[in-house]
Length: 84
Image (cartoon, rainbow, N blue to C red; front, side, top):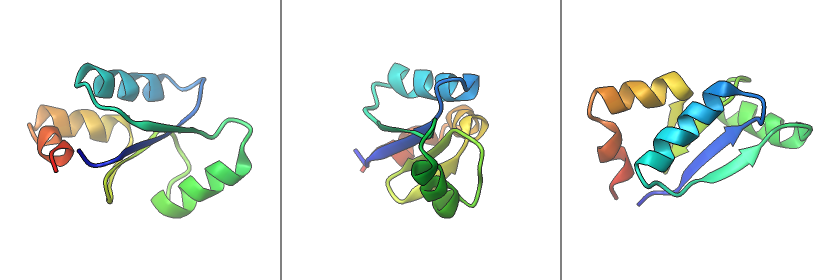
């Protein structure tokens, strides 16, 4: 399974929803919290070209945010991204 990375914040309901979907699918992921960590937020912003959380990567693919993750799931495309 490709590495899954989620940049998130404790106060963000979209982060919670995205992580819940990944957990329901049995996907292990690395969570990088940006709360009070300007260097982590700057890294996320540089990589994603976005400042909002969550920002999700599956392998080298930048999925985007929570809505993007759920759209992939609804389209039946998320499992293919999660399979090596």
